[in-house]
View 1 (cartoon, rainbow, N blue to C red):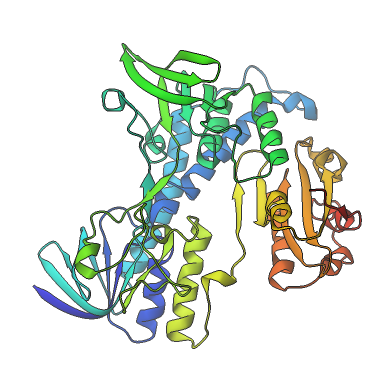
View 2: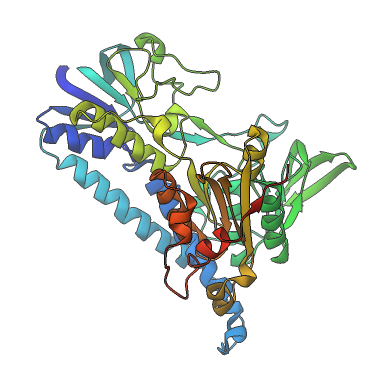
Length: 460
């Protein structure tokens, strides 16, 4: 059967459903196609479920430290993994149901559940149906990369998605990959009670960050007795009874490490290989990401790509911002561009890392004259009062324009405090605006103006 629409949206991640809402409200007839669970990665296997589990792990961690706060707990602190998973499933499931109900009850919107494939630049098939539209929006997300390490086909392994199904405590979890996903799961399961070893191929953790940030995060994790191996290349995997043997080669030689469970956290790839993009003439790069311009248009007129599949961010907030950009350009006569946004994200270990703009290393590499301010969390009253003084805050500003170039805030509440800085950056205001602001005491953000009053020339 053939059906005509004003617009087709493939995928229901963070960009698809709100875009459907805007288009239908503008009077368009819209088809939405979803082959899996409504809500995409964030709702089902990403932000919402993992941060729900992070909260459970935090509760366990603070409970074990209760005596430090003058609180007495009778007996050892235990973790019921079945209840942890049940809580996660409830929180995530409610979000999933909300998205599904929203889209299915949307006026002028028809939902197709199945796999979408392009038949031409203006036609998409799903099951026995053929859908035609002048506007097609791709929002298909991504998935975990699984390496082709020798022996991988013969061992059980986990990814960020399958980790969501665990309702037991792994005895020893090896995590391949020392970046955001791997570190969050590593600390989480260590706090639940697992032995955890993180294997990172590079010379340090989260290599896109500054050296001092990487070092501080490693110190935080090692303090919780998480094993960390740098320059560690996994060269072979094998099954031995109930255990997995991981062969690790490094400059110091080779070693076999046995574990009960293995998690791959080495990156993500877009879900674009089976969309039939070649039939539509849509270009992708070498990694499979759909090429888009500054307004998220592909090389084919009438086709856009939003969210993780376009390689322009890979976060829930960048995906939602993609929707805002497309809607503003199409419906509001408000030209918006991807290049207008400032890089911003967080790492949700405890304490969290909040990031905005350039790193210190990027500023130095640019050759721009700059000033830097830095303050340890031991000098932040709010952190001292909470008994959570690990980490530090630093901010970099341009010496000539006083524009804020970037910030790295690692400490309690820093995933929220970073927005003070981010908003000033969007306003293109000089740092003195924030420096002269009166913040509330006692908070983490009140020390940002203090830090800005102690700026020094940055050293190359």
